[in-house]
Length: 191
Image 1 (spheres, rainbow, N blue to C red):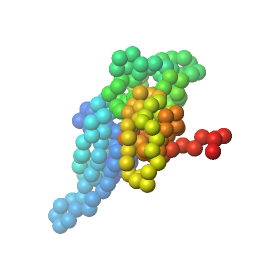
Image 2 (cartoon, rainbow, N blue to C red; image 1 turned 45 degrees about the horizontal axis):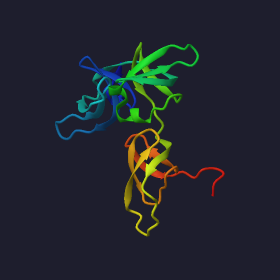
Image 3 (cartoon, helix red, strand yellow; image 1 turned 180 degrees about the vertical axis):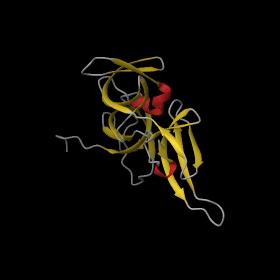
Image 4 (spheres, rainbow, N blue to C red; image 1 turned 90 degrees about the vertical axis):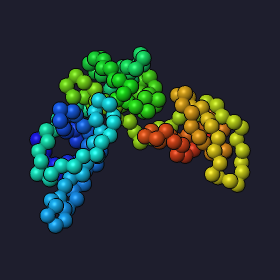
């Protein structure tokens, strides 16, 4: 159990029989006869939908322990993504609903921490950014205007907008949460 005033981002709490991940929690003092309240942004574990809730600071909430284990992504079958524990070789499926837009960043053989409650996968921890190669794009143009963008297809099949100077085969950094271009990656051994 945890009291609402002790909520922290990343915690898993149970509210009205549903499991939620705390995205943010902030205490706001009341005024006059109005008591203070804890305003929390919660994300439902099963669906990924977000909601805002208010709690009394002394309100008790049930917490759940989340296990985190590094697993290797094997393959996708429909909306199920299969991961394997590299030491025990046990496999676990994670639904597309749990992964959301981050599913596009999975490549066979990549190892990522998988969060579970009991036998149920509730999340996969991705890095903030990944480096991917540009599979195809229009010819690079070197212009003074730096705010112009063009479409590029990446090696994982995603399409992103990149600056005009990016060329096919180039390595770029993509923000996982949004799928947006961050920067060109300088490859070692090249000038």
